[in-house]
Amino acid sequence: MGLHPSTDFGTWVAAALTLFIFSFMYKDNPFYKFAEHLFVGVSAGYYIILNFWTVIWPNLMVPLGKAFAGAGVVSEHKGMFAAEQGDYRGWLLIPSVLGVLLFTRLFGRIGWLSRWPLAVIIGVYAGLKTTAFAQSDLVAQVQATLQPLLQKTPWQTVSVFVFTVGLITSLLFFFFSREHKGALGVASKTGMYFLMVGFGAGYGFTVMSRISLLIGRFQFLLENWLGRR
Image (cartoon, rainbow, N blue to C red):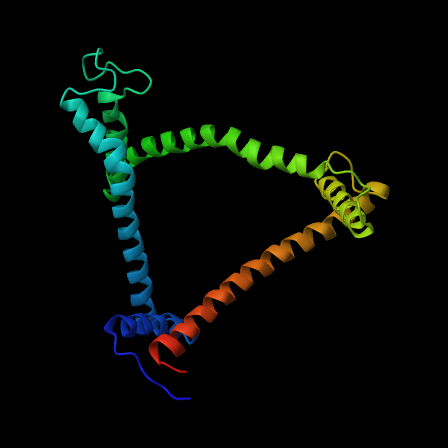
């Protein structure tokens, strides 16, 4: 077993940046700040270019160019603003102006103009996603809880029973119309334990995923960079 360092320049750059990030475990230093800023800058630039060519160009620039050229989805409707469903034409100027106003945040005095497109984005997104989330999350969760207590096997029956108890007691934990005393107090405290188990499992899953990323970087350093076999 020996070391055979890589001769690829890109691998050495990646290894150096990885070590710069790991240097934060000692203390904050210029090497870590350089790698951090580089990562944020490259990520921001990448997603800006990606969204320009996959969202803005096909959905705004191309249709807007056709609109100025006099073309439209519905040929019998003349004029840039003769819009109907499927025929936006010149109305695309509105989202394009709102998009430009987003960048006014970079300029101090007129930065308040960016609040208007942000308000439109948040309002439209909330309106569109409310029904979608209600259908995919709320309704789906309610349907998943409607299970018969008696299952095919004893273990399935116990699992459904524990799930039902956890669901009811967890909901009672958030019932604040009455003081949590007596039976309600016992139920709410039981629900608190179920919630703690759920939050703990979620936190553990997050830690495991981060450790998996850490192991991946160590494997890169040992195998791809140092060539340990």
